[in-house]
Length: 286
Image (cartoon, rainbow, N blue to C red; front, side, top):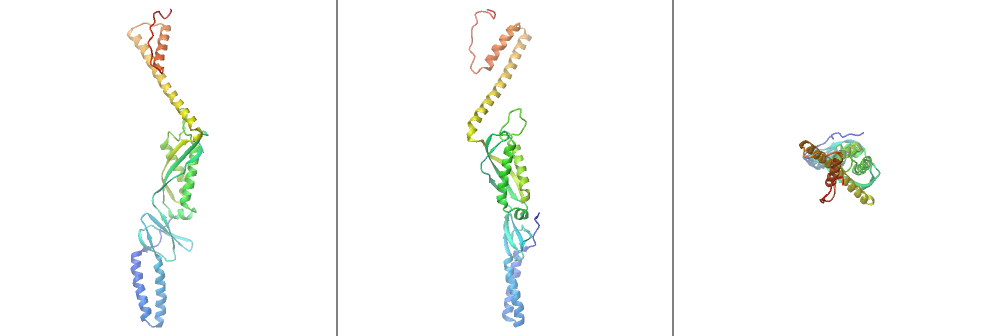
């Protein structure tokens, strides 16, 4: 595995002055000196002329990967005008923070339900040598591997789960799912010299063909959960009412009258519509 090392390079401003002075001196010597020194100075002027091709610019948050005849020679991250061996080939690699949004992928969740899912990945290159030499096209590699990680995550967890289900769900546990996605994407991109800063779901929905059925299921689950809370509250209120009547000695009820009272109170408390008073002209037994 090729890892990043610092390139041997120098300040371009200093080399600009050195080459300029040397070029002027050698050209003047070629013009003014005798024939033998002219040959030597001519060769020196040619070498100095080649040296002019060693200049290059490094922008902020950019690295220059230098190669000599196919061999990695190092990476220069120093900003400004730089100079290195003119025979070096130079490739720019951006070190800036980048992000992309994956396309909407249609996959089946852990329960087999077809869903649509998409994510936003924020990343940057931290090792220019790995990014250039370990993968063919690191930008395309980031895109492909991030979508592959997103597919795998979507098939591992359900879209949503019941209260009895202890698993994470894509819909209810957004923060935990984001951490899982970031970890999985980072594992896949580690070899490309890429650091994943953030990964979050940007779109999550059931596929259109089952969306209506799942909406009805969610509504039914919500109604059942609400009913359960209402019944629990009503039972508690009835128990408190019977206890208060017994403690304060307001009325002494036998088992049958208690059952009737409990039934009436539960109907009133749990009913969808407002209770209507009924006048009983007789007794419980007639």
